[in-house]
Image 1 (cartoon, rainbow, N blue to C red):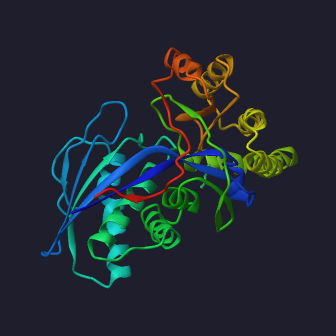
Image 2 (image 1 turned 180 degrees about the horizontal axis):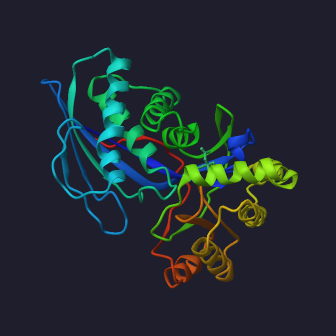
Length: 328
Ligand code: MEV
């Protein structure tokens, strides 16, 4: 038996603009997926998943993609439990040369699904790490990130970004620009997350920004301004200047709002966090619904968010300095 865990992520800066080649800074957070694997010699893959969401919904699923039992789980939960793991195991077979190996795989995750917190990347990274170790192979984080990226690329029909899988594999703060991902220095980041219980449609939101950008030069300028802001944010990270980081997060949220990807519930949570004294707050990920991230070393923001209408869950999730790790 081998067990690995891998963290989720938030975008400190730069989502959406990263699609147009601007830099972005995702950060790994202490909210993890754990994957246990046991080798099987009959070549079969059985996936068991539970506690895949923070809202108390539990899925008990056991099966392979060819053999789905008749259980009432949403497509996204089923995908997380089977399609991602199926493809991750294909990567494990390719990298180890053990073409016929099978596994029993059990997934547990603290990361809400589809909320922009990198839940599928964390499951894939932990699954590849655990399964390769179970076969006696240890992948370096960069190679693991590459295999996990290929997994997401296959499952998501070529729509994957390298940010989530790299961040989950390496931990810490990451600078992404095009296909280039690298770890950067960061101080302790006291993140607080507010989750509205929903999720925006990433494809539609990205398409909406594309249309605006094609229609208006000032929308194109806004995207470029996000890039400038990210570069300023990198300096603030290097200096460990939390106040400056908070101010830039507020600015980034304003620019994302201008690009049409915020929502009433996200704005409400952002303002509740700011009113509670957070150093800064912004939506994280594609937007339209889902999560905000605030920076606050005190307990005030978490408490204020938990009383904010439309906020279904509020929790601390500090910067995870460590990426994937073997637990057993
Ligand atoms: C979604 O998590 C982040 C976006 O920038 C899309 C992407 O980078 O693929 C909105």
